[in-house]
Image 1 (cartoon, rainbow, N blue to C red):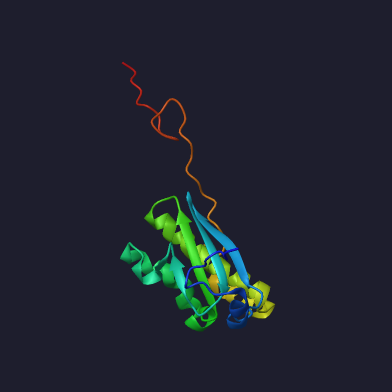
Image 2: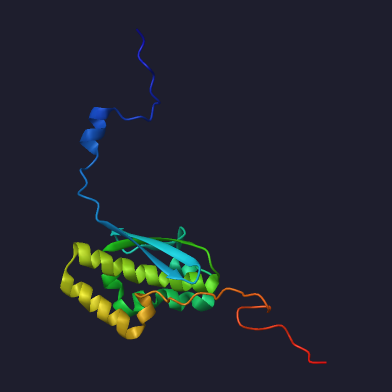
Length: 165
């Protein structure tokens, strides 16, 4: 009987077991941030300080005028707190500004959740206090939503013009 051929680049099971280092348990958290209809989901895991949004680094995010809003958590907490983690964010829905606010919220919440689960409670509390003191929306979602349109007018509150003559 002929042996099934393997591609020349395939590594046999024995060799693979010897060369692949044993990884520890994956330390990761998944959180979301919301603003209006924009939703950003952040995956935070042990790493070396990489932050990407939809596969792009933070400095390539458009519009450029709102980049500092994205960098606020990093600037407030310092790069050393982000040095041990990788954060990958996926964002959908909403407009440019709403997406930026959803991303910054998800990054902040991801770091707090990671520190709570895998580091210690004291440093998590310190991070949380710094973020809330600067801007509460970094951790707490803005509950305001668009009001629905009603009949008798062009919008939610405005009424059609009325004539008496």
